[in-house]
Length: 100
Length: 201
Image (cartoon, rainbow over all chains, first blue to last red; front, side):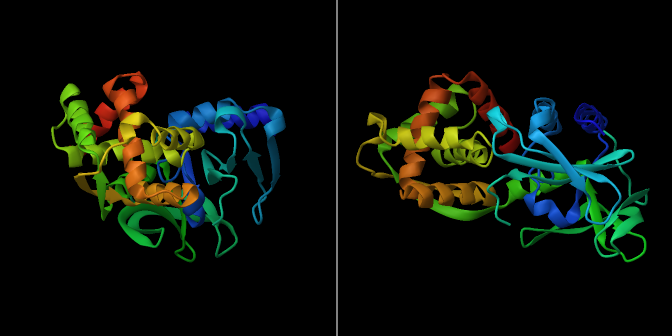
């Protein structure tokens, strides 16, 4: 999936409220614990450019895990998610110097 | 927002079964940061019963729980004119005339921003305000209030990082609030203060 497709899909899921957070990683998920609102997440993801993005395979599912490292106002944030229709599932939303 | 219901079916990645599994939503206690939050909607693996994920609607429950944990009792020594600043802020915004209550809300407002990516800027502003002329004066007055976990951790972090006393940080917050909220130099923050006060009182 191309980066722009990922971005549009992620924003659509957040707008529609089809959002879940991986329970195991809730401690390193600032979105899951309410530090960021859905509106803020849309702004953050919407502002990301292709060169701030990469992806890799999930450690046991046959899906891509999408990784964003925003710059500018949200420099230092690390965002990791994947999709299971119709939801977006966030694994991490934390500062890059997070030590769990 | 899509709202999931108790008993609703879904699919998710189970870390125990290490595969995509069928799940069912139900309300159960959630372990978070060594504490247990009661009645949080989660989806559980139909095969092994492990918790798989929490829906966005539950994040508001977690947030409220974190904010409601006012369990750190702190006392600060401040110059008497800092009480006047707090009362002036409270009366100007029609919120309260109690310095302890006002300081709790103001400090929560500023300290909640520390964990955000723009937190460094807020931290610098507070530390710089500690050198302001208004921060000076014999600390003859006392403030005591209960802090939630999040604000308390942020306060301790700044204190350790900058090697300053928490009372000095309290002074920095009050002086910063004098400019931002009393003088209304940061209209957005002043509005946030009113909203937070409405939520907390």
